[in-house]
Length: 155
Ligand code: SME
Image (cartoon, rainbow, N blue to C red; front, side, top):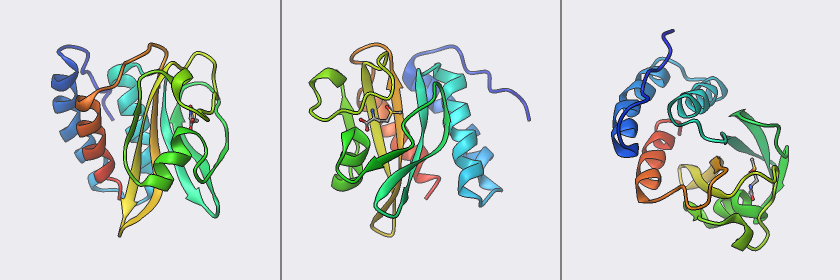
């Protein structure tokens, strides 16, 4: 497996280069944990995000799944924090300043902005992709569109 080498270009250009590589990475593997692991690594390698990873629905909580970055909270309740809210509302949430999001769960004090994209299969949320930045305002419509496409490859 070659290392991904997408360090140049605008964010949109890097997502555009990354998308076919992620498609290739997940195309021949059906195991969801293996694919989540490689997607987390590919996003971390390409963008250097502070924290990028998945939580999977397990009973009445989101349970920590493959990620890259500092250790994180293992379980998040339905409707709790940004992740639990994205689960409940079943849509992507962008938080430009985590200090202004009521109920934000600070797994790490360095996290300043965040995007959470739900994984929706057959109308049900089966997990979320969570990306955290240590800078405020790091996520915009480009991230929403690209991360929703990437997550679409996993459901
Ligand atoms: N901040 C998230 C919790 C997960 S960690 O950031 C990895 C939240 O409020 O749901």
